[in-house]
Length: 174
Image 1 (cartoon, helix red, strand yellow):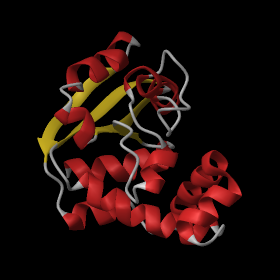
Image 2 (cartoon, rainbow, N blue to C red):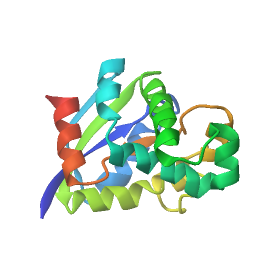
Image 3 (spheres, helix red, strand yellow):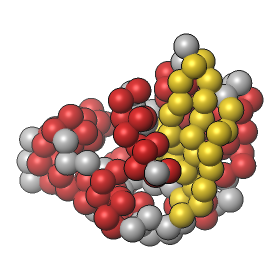
């Protein structure tokens, strides 16, 4: 089934001149770029992108708990509550997204969301499999970012599902 999804090359990927290499990974997998733009996101746009939905917030908190463990997470955040952790991470992510130019891209193809997620790799570059973008090109970790009280510099945002992809495409391109 033909689908569309959104990928954002974050400020670290843009600053490191990795945009073309990152996008080539997707096009080499048979995906087509149907829209592309470079933008410095406003805080308002970033807040709409990183919603305060329960699913997104708790998901962010759970990823940190899975990587940092309960003791490490409590040391940094003072809690093991995924929602509370996720709210802090959302703030850091918003600040990171507005810290420099990003490249927003709409990709189209067969099973695009699933393909893009597989090519992109796990959120934490230090834990992502080799052969994925984050595993090959990433140079940060959730643990390091948490200790420095900032968002993980993980090169890319990729929509997590079809509904999120549709919402994000509209947000970035309408």
